[in-house]
Length: 420
Image: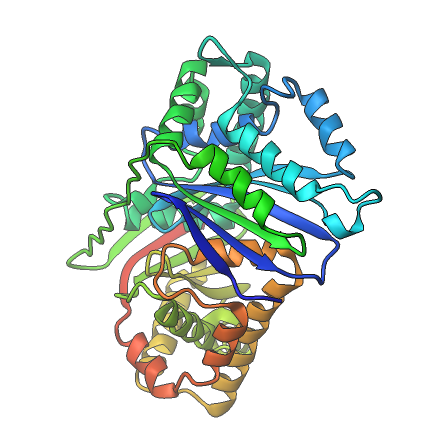
């Protein structure tokens, strides 16, 4: 597998590629990054889904599906994710690599052209998308939002972030709210398309064994002559003078406890790797402090997991607990964190955490989708690493560095969702 090679197409548009012959398919994607905004999040999310239903060349879902089938069963799919203070809208297409086609067809070039057509030549008439496409995708987007509410673990994490970062872009949901999606008009979605074309930062990626030149030239044709004024998010961290405590009640059999911390981090890949290892030592693995001591030895919770968002510098610890054990669990978590800060890290804990982090990094090499997600996940940080290089650097992270990072972490918000 070759290194990740990036080429600038124009202002705000970058083409990145990896030549990898381990797979029989190739994958192309376009990720549009914009600052999260309450005014645009819902329209952007709905737009990304609507775009994958049709385009000018294939003006309905059936004709577009037939075209994908003709390209050896290619697949097209959108995704919406949050990356720090940014909303990332990805449209990806995957299909058979050129060397495996029966008659030497350049499937990769056709997929690049199709992806560009979907973005730049959607099925728009008189400034409006297909009303059927809008309503179909609106319904599915609302179902996705409702499913997040019904997943109480996810809901509790989301509510902790909303309370913790209420004055920051990070608190805005990746889909917007249910009410915002319901209120969207066709004209709103069209305006979102026009705005994204001129303002979004675009990360194009191509992974597989096919030559990248035809795809690169195709993207240049569509992107190269478009005027652009990309907008970067203003990173703000509003740290409270004292810890915030927020509580809600719902009809639940298992209460949720979420503790939000500020990492006070450096925005580069080396610091991100170190933060991830610190989180793994604390509560990211079955051999971590929180799992062994809070869950196993003290039996205070059903689960207790630490995770860090390195694009924002936020660490979250979430637990499923009995209501009467909420306070005990919170105190036990803080006790383990204090032990970490004081340097109470055994060699076994550090070795196991490093193995877990390295396995996670190397597993991203097992699929093109995971590999693409890995590189897109690092585009907002400096000095982007490869999974292999990151795994190698993990071994060199010292116990002292973990302790140093842990002592920078500050508790911000404690959110409880109590079962009544």
